[in-house]
Length: 214
Image (cartoon, rainbow, N blue to C red; front, side):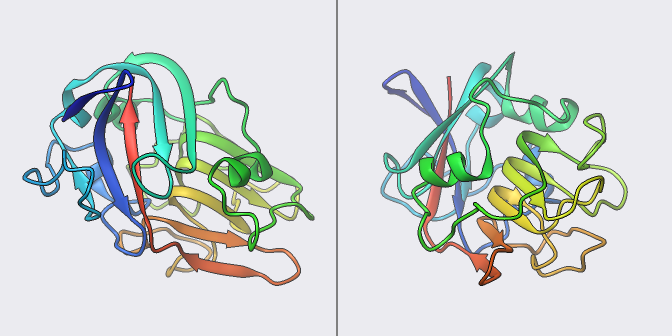
């Protein structure tokens, strides 16, 4: 782990078009590290997970979506737990920043080309959602059609537990995530996105996102 970055500790990196941090990946909550030899290296863009993911307790995480210091958003959860504990046992976590799809897109500096402005009837933003309607749903077990590990997901219609029309963040699912609309999996790109606006954009960002705790 790499502490001392303005009070933040680097604990992980998500490379956009690889699947280490897919919605159903066990790396979110297990004790296995990813490339520990380069996990503390800010110049390495490979996906990584260091010991700090398991051991450093915090009440906030910060995602810098395009490099170690750029396009950053803070997620204040107030739990004072490690990220392995959060993603293993804390579900449907709201954050103090109160993000929406448009405001998170602005923080991550992905508008344009994405818009996230039209026909979003329902959305969930925060940490570790396994359902669009039941915040206590565990995303780690069973078959899930909706997962949001870090970020926002949304839908064009109201009243549905499956939010699959809009997705932005790390480990987020949608109908265009490489699986069907009715399941999530381990092969979805880590930085998958979907914006079902007038152009119906979907894909994966190619940059590396850096994850810090405090």
